Length: 363
Image (cartoon, rainbow, N blue to C red; front, side, top):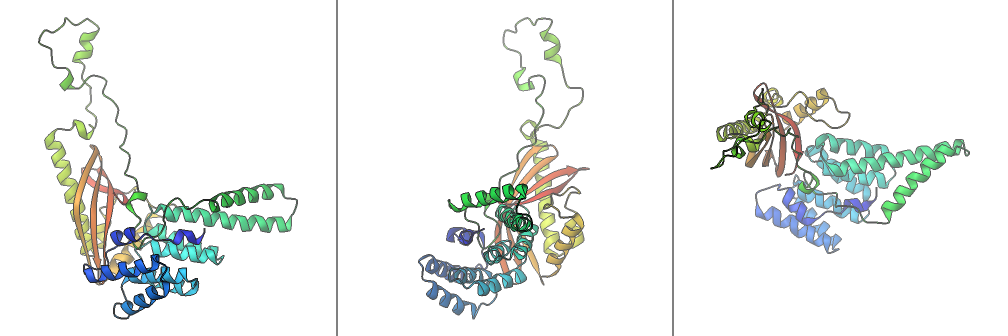
């Protein structure tokens, strides 16, 4: 995993994280980022330090300072910066990702693996962290195969596996990364896809709208008569497109009310009430238990002195009578931290109640 995975895009940086509503802070971060992009590392660092002397908790400028130090090959100092951000803002996955890149550049693959696992625990849908973790596993496997060959030079299996891994990394190094991997906030929306609609069985007969009799009805054949009159014995879940207007409106209202109530419980730091909005089969990161996830959420909700979560521009997408998604811009404020992130909640209906089946960052 090379340092090329540590290149930020200013547009993504500015759009994805809004540490403050103050335009002064946003302009300052943009100016420092612009200096960095222009190769003016010393000036950018000097300006970042000046700003942080009066705004020491500003995560965005601290993040940019970490990137500047990385560009200057001051790896130890950069690690301190990103570690500090993870301490103050543990909900951000990117600082963990950057730590992993820096640790990997030093050959500290265990630390890199731990940092990436933290990023994934924070945002299970963070594709970049998953990809980087795969690279770390491959590097660690390479070391293990090397060790095996030192102990047994005739080990053909180890030789072939090591050759395969080296071939993978040689191909990676011959082309640029598929996408930028670091922004100072939640993963960029483009990296997240919307949930695919659940398959719905096609009806055996035509819908009522297509069975209206023509002006001059043709005499039905005996074989056609039963088909025209046939109705399903049990009415199964309808796709959203076939629902009546009242049904759709009711589901839309119920979904929006659920999401608002979820945000209200979060804002009130009501952990027990907040957790009740999640389905028993909630999608978690690989290897994570429900108990561990709940404990992490409890710690992150309890730690800040105050929390405020606003749901902005919610869009409901009904898939069928028991599956839907709600996409919205989430404005999160906790003490001095302030961010806006697009989020999608994949919802399921259980015993008449809508519950969160999966959380995804992005639209």
